Image (cartoon, rainbow, N blue to C red):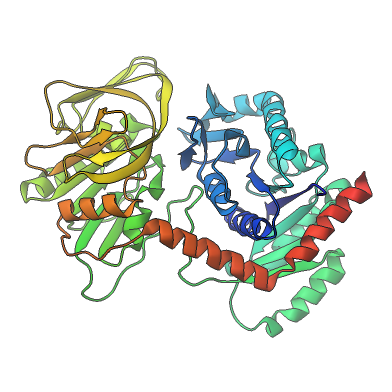
Length: 494
């Protein structure tokens, strides 16, 4: 079996790189090849935990699923988790090497690149094909020096490249031609074609543009992918909008604040998609509507995000919400916010040691410490009828209760996890992904007040969407021809 690789780069962020790699993973797997996804560098607050307790970007976990694989840390060796506008926590092959500002990380890239090349080679030695996802755009002139996310990496391993652009944003021909023009001659030579994403309408009206593009650049258009209505795939980083549902089926109104450093927002994807649940995401300076359930989400900078909530009136809103019988769920950072104190003695989230008063609903004190809890977990929601639950932990804080409490769940090793208030209005937990299993979802909806809600299997829905995406790409691209094109590229270069 001849090994081949391919890198998908985009003209912009959110052009469709992650979705195209996901589709290609599934389609190449269906052709009997062992294929692995790879992204050398990912900047995202939406991450996943591997079975051996390492942290990677959420998109690569989804792509691994499409390829029929368990997520592996080598699929995303460099993960940057922003904690300020100019800095991020840098995670190399699953281990944090500390916080760096943008300039500091730029200097560090030479070291980081070695880790990316090492991880890539491990996958290349194991699989028939490695599908590589770029980051942002390869034409960011200010970032080209020491680039390890796009063409810099492609040049290092000498792989072919597809450039994808989102026609729904407008200006697709300018995006593609401009991106190609800003590449060096050797980089242009490795571009084997273009893909146009999210097209609506009659393809005949686009044909003259496609002909012009191919004549102008000398590069073929490998596919025009249609806009998939209502399509859902777990978001790599941006907080996905929540659809407004019409009619009388809504049984539960959920309100969630969008924090400056919201992390793992895929936690509520199953709620957004549930036919009986209306999720409203509230951004800065938007009116907070009435709700049955308030979810305080995960956060990469808990103290500053809590200050943000207070500034916008959420503290008073939550007090009033609870006074009238509403429910509150805090997940990870949101769980910590519901406690009494948040201590950062090492200055991990801030420039110097600090302490902040929490919302005070849970008798708990949290201290940020070196190292992270990174675990996949299973168990039962012992406080709510022993429904099965699975999820994962990603946090640096160590929380201690100041008195005896009722716990939320009992985990696989007998460990008691989380908190449930005596009046059953407040739940706090470190478990991300707790709505993804249908049994836990039903138990939590019952707790929140939607006792007659329909059964909804989020995991089956995700499989349906991956299959729909792959089928669409199979219909609008020549996948077998693309595989041969990639192999021909490498034979020509060898």
